[in-house]
Image (cartoon, rainbow, N blue to C red; front, side, top):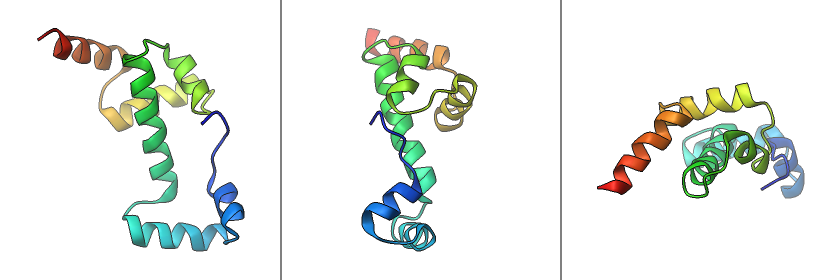
Length: 96
């Protein structure tokens, strides 16, 4: 998942217009394609940060997000926690 994934790239691959792809995705899945892509990326980042002990910067690079400020905000938006808080909570969970 090192390449940048976009609605336009997916739509082109499927030979659909970006607008139509977004519409049918939202109607079928119940969330926007952009939101879904971000959610998948954040799940990968969470795994890399905790299970593999990667830095947030390295984890972000692996999912195609190089702006660390944006990545930090996105991580907190999806988890409700900073990376440090997330690591601490996960570490406490595995210690018990």
